[in-house]
Amino acid sequence: MGAFYLFSYWFGFAILCILLLIASAFLGYCLYVKYIHLKYDHIPGPPRDSFLFGHAPTMIEETRSGRNLHDKFLQWSEMYGPVYRINSLHMVIIGVTCPEATKEILMSPKYPKDKLLYARLFNLFGVRFLGSGLVSATNHEQWYKQRRIMDPAFSTLYLRGLMGTFNERAENLMDELTKLADSKKEAKMHQLLSRVTLDVITKVAFGMDLDLVNNDSPFLKAIETCLKGMVANLRDLFFQYKQKNRPFIKEVREACQFLRTTGEDWISKRRTAVQNGEDVPKDILTQIIKSAGQGCDTNTILQNCNTALVILQFLVSVTRGLRLFFLLVLKETLRLYPSAPGLSREVSSDITIAGYDIPGGTIQMFDTYVNGRMDKFFKDPLTFDPDRFHPDATKPYYCYFPFALGARSCLGQKFAQMEAKVVMAKLLQRFDFSLVPGQSFDILDTGTLRPKSGVVCNIKHRDQ
Ligand code: HEM
Image (cartoon, rainbow, N blue to C red; front, side, top):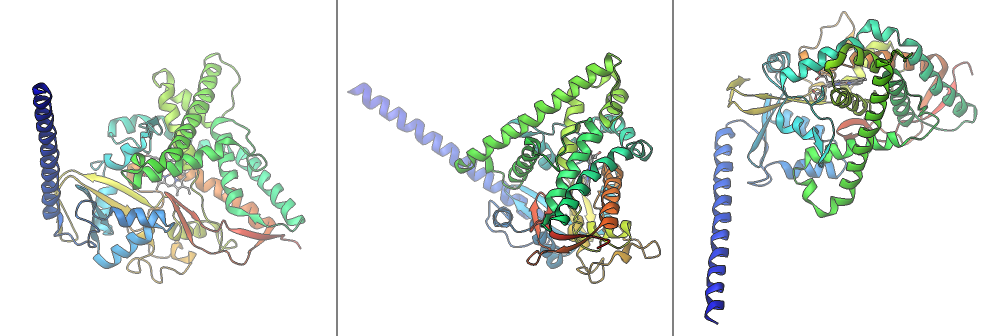
């Protein structure tokens, strides 16, 4: 009996000590959060939803209810000025719409991509996702090594040689549209364009004939699922710990694994073929394997191929102004509907932006969607006017960056433009489009932005 009492006494004591420890750790953490608030509260910002979670509940709710989070950032930028503060736990992100700061920070390699966001792309719920590929590498040396390997495969000269493939894939889409126009059936343009985009990259980059315009492929679903998982994981720090998300997390892991093994398989077959001197397609993968030489492992190539595939879900919304001059239309479309609107950088030392002293160690966030819709940068910002980008018009000054800026700008910019040019030229020459009533210009925020109602169109042959 005595032993039992003694055990209960010590057990109770141990529990009490543990509780006290947890309480003091929590108190210490709260004090730290308070210190962070004091350190940054001279920077304007919306009222926090809660002491601990800061603005995270608002952001999670925006995402959960299907609204575009970037509209919230736009609202905050308009209310609080060129720099505003977002808190979440002990972390602070500064939203910036000051052109001088945008120029300084995005154009200089001195400010790396931030680890908080980009390191979360390394793994997705425990399965390797983008690794330290081009988009997600935060270490400059590591990034530079890879970019040097990838650059030649995305040069204008090299891409011009792939024009035949661009054309051939775009023709598949035209055939499908011809069928729809003949049978007077509606065309789900967003879906079709997503498919042709992926079709082009898998052919141009990996020499694969998936013909996604006419066939379903687990590939499409896997990429969609990974993208969804990526956004959920980025926007809600506790997403993976919530019981109700378990089935979805399992799906994401499987999708990630599927992309990885498929990519590994394609790459290792091609490496072997190149090493054996076999006749291989003159595509981007061959170019990368050759320029990487022996020093580049499958992993490095794979993580960049995965990156490219995920990125290719970015789609230009070709809903308006189809008959206007191509490049201006494309630029104006990306002003209002940028596919990848947000960028962030880590600023390790103190900096002054628009008169506000910002302590070192913060993350600065730049948003081309927000800038593009502010009337301090673009007159009547919601009016679609391609002439804003006319060569004679004043160029936007560091307030327009749909392909990012500086060294870390989009590697695939020329690729995307070339592809859009081929597809749009064919579309314009051959068909007339009218939106099916009920379609809106609303945006679906899935990390990348896309048209919410799918751009369903009635199409007619142009000569009819
Ligand atoms: C309309 C189409 C596209 C848009 C709007 C776009 C936009 C962007 C943006 C904003 C970034 C910077 C991302 C960040 O810093 O987090 C980026 C990076 C990148 N993009 Fe694109 N992109 C497009 C198409 C493509 C295509 C077709 C490819 C490849 C085939 C591609 C490959 C890349 C790569 C590899 C990076 C990382 C570059 C680096 O850090 O060195 N993109 N893109």
